Amino acid sequence: MNPIEKSTTKLIELDPNTARLTVDLSALKTNFLLLNEMTGDARLAAVVKADGYGLGAARLAPPLVEAGCDLFFVARAHEGAALRDAGISQDIFILDGLAVAEPEQLHRYNLTPCLNRLAEIERWGAYAQAQGIKLSAAVHFDTGISRLAMPLAEFETMAGDPSCLNGIDVAFWMSHLACADAPSHPQNAKQLNRFKAALARLPAAKACLANSGGIFLGKDYHFDVCRTGIALFGCRPGKLKSERLSAVVLAEARVLQVRDIPAGTTVGYGATWEAKRPSRIATMGLGYADGYPRHLGGLADVGFKGQRAPIIGRISMDLLMADLTDLPPDLVSAGDWAEIMGETVRAEELAAMAGTIPYEMLTSLGRRYRRQYA
Ligand SMILES: *Cc1c(COP(=O)(O)O)cnc(C)c1O
Image 1: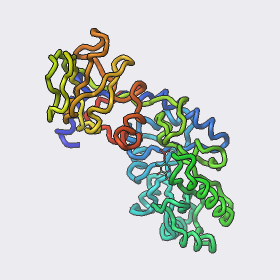
Image 2 (image 1 turned 90 degrees about the horizontal axis):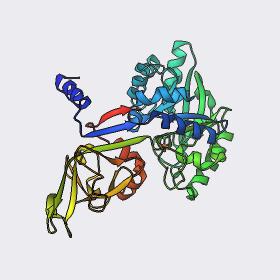
Image 3 (image 1 turned 30 degrees about the vertical axis):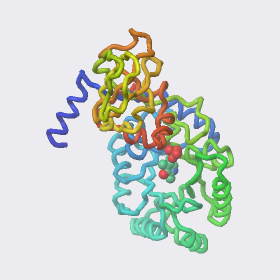
Image 4 (image 1 turned 45 degrees about the vertical axis):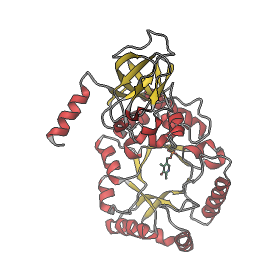
């Protein structure tokens, strides 16, 4: 860290601060336990890639371990190494596998690859044999997403000659659903059938298919290991029910000013919003630089003590404005905190309005929040 970054971090820890992010670790644990109950005998893995969906993987992992989680997934090798540095000793699987990482780099940190190509299987197996040991790996093959996992032709080669797996302990066979957030999509059953047919042709080992959406598709999709990410944070995968999951993230912005304006006054860049009546306006210290989508201006609400007020005009880099006129006159004062995203204004709701998904809302949260873990 250079000295400028250091002092910025320090300033963010100081009051006054205008944006804060509260991560409710006990809600996280409750969600894990609930999902673990849903998945029955299957082992539930926590996916904490992208620094725990932007919330801080090193802070999320210990309470997840307390809740019984003994298996983590991350995307990049360095994300796994960071979890090791944070003292996590449980199994950590690297979704990228050996696409760019070297076997010895993963082995040094006791990280386990998801092997996504035949060539990766060969390299991991050769490395293990050269060390005179067997090494664990997940073997990830494609059943209909055409992304990182082993393509069909390579799967055929592997199924035809499982000796290519010499040196490797297959922790589980793995695949990934393309449409798990859309329960009625025919792709789900198609992939489930392809996965089962593939397992029947492979040496016996555990199997892992479902992400959060897959867990909600029911028992047929659970197999031996499930991988959950977004549901841990209380977000519904797609249109699936999440009533029992608790919101883990509360993003808030400080009210910097409250003012009364006469009818005919415009608010914000472009003068796109004009008061039709005498109005009371709050200006908050948060904007698109904090990862709040700019085009939610005029669409989304913010919350004040459980009540909602519409965002008006354009969202600026550092500021956004809300119309308080319909709220009780004494409800909001300068210095108060407005809920930007939380229980009153859910991430799923904002994502839908912004034409995106809660995953992107969470991972876009910027660097200017003071982060606190409750
Ligand atoms: C991100 C990811 C997950 C987690 O998905 P959620 O929808 O957040 O539960 C699981 N498996 C793979 C392969 C992923 O890339």
